[in-house]
Structure formats: structure tokens, C-alpha cells
Amino acid sequence: MARPREPIDLIMHKGKSHKTKEEIERRKENEVKAYDDDIRPPKFLTGKAQKEKFEYIAGELCRIGIMSNLDCDEVGRYIVAQKEWEKYGRLVDMMRRKLGEAVRSGNNILIDFYTDCLSKYETLRTKAFQQCHTCASSLGLTITSRCRLVIPKTEEVRENKFRIFGKEASG
Image (cartoon, rainbow, N blue to C red; front, side, top):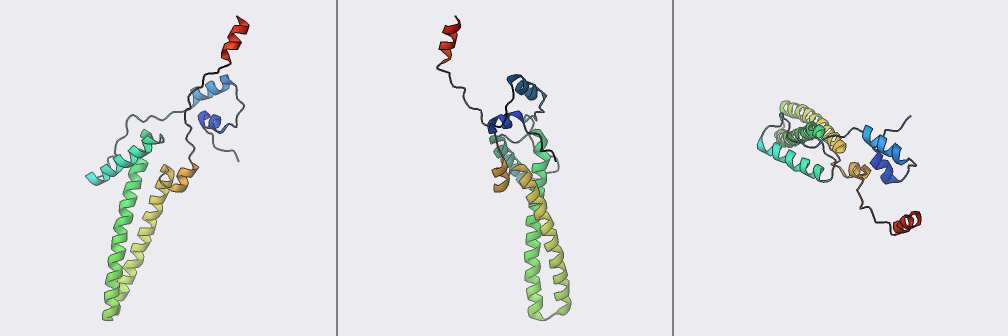
């Protein structure tokens, strides 16, 4: 199976290529570049807190150079999934308290009801967590996903101190 195509800057950063300058330039010209000039919260984010969270995460991702305009919806989905996970976590806690009260009172009808509700909310919380984790991984928000990122850094071109000898020899 073929490996996914990597940007030429990443290939050169790894030092595993024997491409000519012309091949490198041609490859750079043909690469798709994603713009980062219009990063704003998606319309489905409601409320000031969600938009502030978006601004914070987007700012951090821009700071390390991996955020583009195309990632705004993914960050938004992450924020929504995290909010859902938190909501279902509160409901699970509430159902556990209610179930404990029902067990202490010995009311079998309430025990069955709260057990059923607890099971459903735990399933929904697990699904929300999985969605949240998937979004976080694809955005580089988890430790393991950041470890897999290789972000090429532009290094200063050093002056070749022997360059003058080449010019003198030819001149």
C-alpha cells in the first residue's frame, strides 16, 4: 500500500530525499497550500464561552503553524463534542445519586428506572468522549498526536565561508 504524500518541506526536513533543485521547486509549485487568513468560529457554535474556547484553541494551533481556514469546523465539532461529554457526565452523576437514593429507599420501580437511565447516559457520554477524542487527535490536541507531528522549521541559511574561493578561482 502506498504511503500518503508528504509536503516537500517535510521530506527535505527529514533528510531522506535526493531530489534536484528543479524537482523540489516543481513539487513546491504543485503543492496545495491551505490559507489561514479567515479563521473564525463556525456559525453552529452558540454562546460566548464556546466562541472564546474556539479563539483560544485556534490561536494555539496557529501559533504552532498547523491551523488553516479549513480546520474551523473541526475545532467547532471538538468544542461541541466536549460540551456534550460534560453534559452527559453531569447527568450520569445525577442518575448515580438518584439510584443510590432509590436503593436506600428500597423502591424497585425507581431502581429499575434510574438503572436504565444511567445506562443510556453512560452510553451517550462514551460516544461523546469518542467523538471529542477523535476530533482532538485529528487537530493535534493530544500528546500522542502532537508527537506524530513533524513541523519543519525554517533555518537561517548560513554564509558559506568558502564561497569566495569559488568566485576568485573562476574570475
